[in-house]
Length: 551
Image: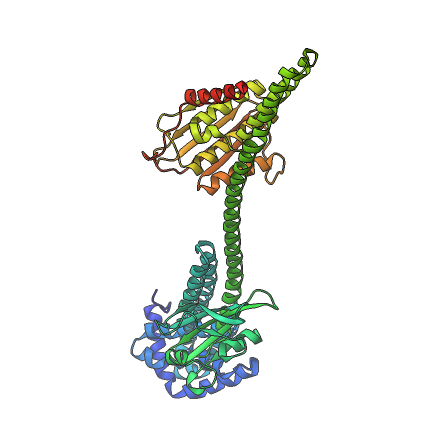
């Protein structure tokens, strides 16, 4: 918005008339004003120069040409400068009042018959000037607040650390009107400051560019922990990198502090012309750096946490794969060694039965029963470790077998409903879904006190596989971070999440439990080996069992 001076046209005409009448006296008026200002405030030269530019004498030439808009622009610039110099607005008001008091005697002589009118015009001019300066103060504060809020917004919206660093640097450069900037972070392993973000350098700045703490301008800031400035880079040839000197005439730098003792980097911006910062600019850049350091520290922790979670997920998936392989190995050893050993024992018992007296026959039969029960138990154990039914019949038949075993062993009525379009899945997906069903039914048998269980499986429109296992048991109260019955659920969740799927448990006391699983899966391939029918599977097992019995 263009600045303006809130004066009526009639008042402007009187101000022009007054300025022309006081022109010869402005040097004396200004000298008297300076003396009174130094008596009250002892401001330095920069502040006094800015305050002087707000006065009637400074605007005389502009008023005579009717350039009130240009004077208003002048007020905005120097009002902003006074805000950056941290001059209180009350001091500005007092400065305008003193200048008005210094003008009144001269105005009274020039306009003896209109003294009250002229004094009122001076008061109006001082008031309008103060309003314009106050607007400049407000805008300076608004821009400072907006810069800090922008850093907070960048922290909340940046997807990762590099994006956050780039955004912070852009915000800082835009806030101060800098032409270039660089953000360096400490690399503990290399013991140096590495460039993590840069603007305004083009392709000149190498991504591997680094500075050791204590070396050069940026390195000095990293060691001292205090803001620093090069107001004119041409006057120093020792500390600056040639690339930086080629692009910038002045540099501002502030440390990025994680705490009072720990410095994690340096934020640096540069200008194409010599430029010395003012106190408020220095404090604002320090505030931006402090806010950015906190955001960067949190982003680094989040990145480290995400990396750790990724590694944990990879390790979990690896452990699950190793677990499955170990189950297969153990089941093979049980089948090939223990199973065969039991079959040999059974064979020898049969041979002994024909050799021993009939009195020992009853004991032989009892031993036969024990061996048969052991063989049957061994088969169940092998089936749990590495289910042959899953490998040869496929997932659907394996789930139906688990449901049938639940009804047989726990008396829980189980309904299985599988959509026709599910088909065979990848071995990893079938194993994961089977283990989820197996663990869920195990929990039903052990904890749920349920009468019925429903198992449903179908495909979504996107080809994903959806599984739901729901019982009408006693349920449980879900609590965050509860370790009760958490390991079984955690294992199911890890299997599903490892495949890029989703896992959800809904339960309540007396309301049963429902487990929903969704796993992304490509459509069943025609190259997949056809599953053996359950009739063929049972027939083959029966043949093996009868063959063993005959032996």
